[in-house]
Amino acid sequence: MPSETESRIAAVASEATAWRRDIHAHPELAFQEHRTSDLVAGLLQSWGIEVTRGIAGTGLVGTLRGGKAAKGGANAGRAIGLRADMDALPMQEITGLPYASTQEITGLPYASTVPGKMHACGHDGHTAMLLGAAKYLAETKNFDGTVHFIFQPAEEDGGGGRVMVEEGLFTRFPCDAVFGIHNDSRSEAGQFIVTRGTTNAAADSISIRVLGLGGHAARPHQAVDPVVAAAHVVVAAQTVVSRHTDPLDSAVVSLCMIHGGTARNVIPEEVTIEGTVRTLKAETRDAVEQQLREVITATAAAHGAKAEITYERGYPSVVNSDAPVERARLAAAKLAGEERLVRERPPTMGGEDFSYMAQTVPGCFIRLGQADPSKENFSTHHPRYNFNDAILPTGIAFWASLVEQELAPEG
Image 1: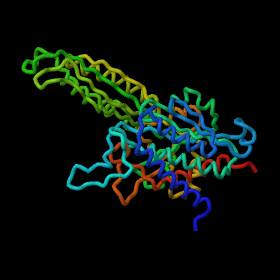
Image 2 (image 1 turned 180 degrees about the vertical axis):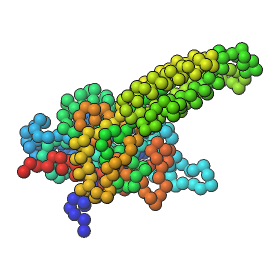
Image 3 (image 1 turned 135 degrees about the vertical axis):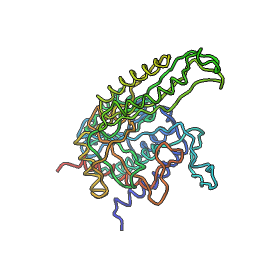
Image 4 (image 1 turned 135 degrees about the horizontal axis):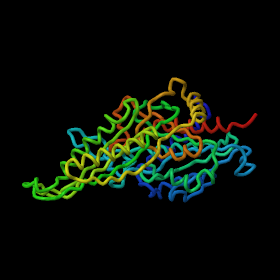
């Protein structure tokens, strides 16, 4: 027979599934999460949680106090922050459409209702998990201190985490530590991945204009062909990782967009190339940028063209602090068992703006497996990706357990 706590969590998880699917059906992009923010704020307020809105535009913080903190005001006792992201991606969801093959896939009843927008990274699930934990903790209040439920906009594009920090997130809502969870589509459902040090790469962007001299396609000797120069630039840029970066280090250069020309018989004036650069170490980040500038400039010049490079620093690496890692591991092991806890795993080259929060106060970014071995599992950012609702009870229970552990009544 399930315990009272398990029954409570199961009941909340059932509601969280409905919230998650509602959010999934109504995706909103970075800094446009108005409906989602309204939904979150309304639920938090209905449970008696203090809500502060308008942080980074659509971001908000729910504050819940228990024990001495509830009696002594905002500055009494200890405090922790729990963060979830709310935004979707500019992608067309195809889970709800017929698959273009001999077999049709049954559409999700809660598929995106907004063309060109989709919750393809599980932020709908992250938001629902944190909401579930907020409701449970508001009902039980089995802790002594302050919990700040941080609902962040614009993780995918725009750095909502950075904007929240810049707008005084941790001065207005002081936290001894901050924690975040992201689903992991590669790991088995219910498995916790909690690692020390760097967990996510720095994510930068690069834009290249290859400038040539246009002309007739039949007379290439009278032109400077930026298409040929751009093709060599794309290939040469890969040597920055393969021949200029320590093989024991990690870096990724992916040039994902190339545009140029308007007709098949016209050599264009220019070609544009855009992509992303991922690194784990600060020194590697600096070196890769410098090497890309040198290699791209020289390669374009070797073909008589000129390269104009715009290199923008994006999210820094997520670096977990030791103390929060150990506390998160303890809570995960108590909840799921040591066999479901992964303590060591290489970092992912994906970027995450939780990094700005973890740079400001001690932080820990946790992965929660969601893969169902009985089904085909699609990775995040895939048009067929869908958050696995079966892990909602696990995520809610973890958040609740972590709060009750970290803010346990003294004595």
